[in-house]
Image 1 (cartoon, rainbow, N blue to C red):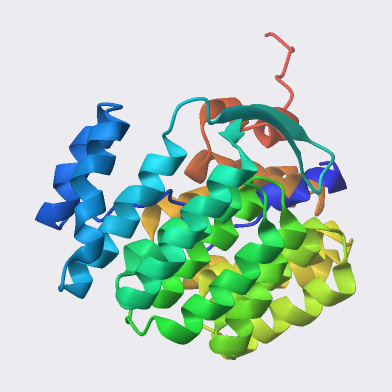
Image 2: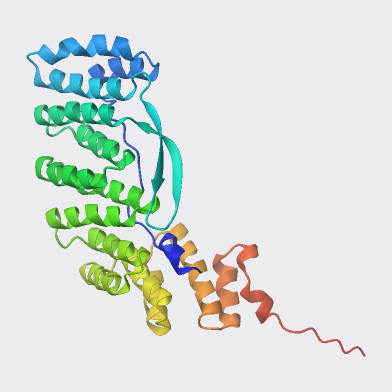
Length: 308
């Protein structure tokens, strides 16, 4: 496998998600959401603007959430952006004008001041900074949100953004955010393990090994950190260490579907790196689709052509 693509073989701990800037649980938000979804932005503006003068802080915050969406959905706001990433790729897609982003951020910042424990506002701000490629600002915003928001769900919410950046090939930006999380959630094995995966994706193997070994030390029963350590040893040519940690990860994993996928990858390792076609075939029969049972072709005995 190409080393430049090796990041795709790591298991990212948290699944990426794209939160809305709105909080669909609140009746007020549902009123303006329906208008925004129907592209009735001016009606949404007229609905929400009076809420700015409400004596209720929650209603004021809702007004700013609404108006941030109004700004971003306004007429002639869409532009075309070309985004690159750390693995040499890139894509072209629609985006927002900088002025609109700045104005929407002002609304979201004010909403956070008014309703600091409303997670959806923090998520909306991070999402906006992510899609507008303002990753350094995103790291600063995350630092602030980690300080302000006190919910028990905070870390998992923040990890989602590091995963999105990782999967999009923005590995350095993902690491930038993970370093913020490491500051606020020190010695968390998920954060440390994902830092290891990020550095491995950048082929900075010494740093990757350091973080992945630390993650395993912090959570020795975690199959994902253990598997990722084996994966890195595999990519760096330390075959015996890779075999040791692969097998350890498989012994730890209790998720049947995930374990089957790992076992199939391990079978390929046995075939191509340990060069044991017979054992690899047995493993592939147990965990791989028939099209992936490549070792069995090598291990198949030669037919006896003698006839009596």
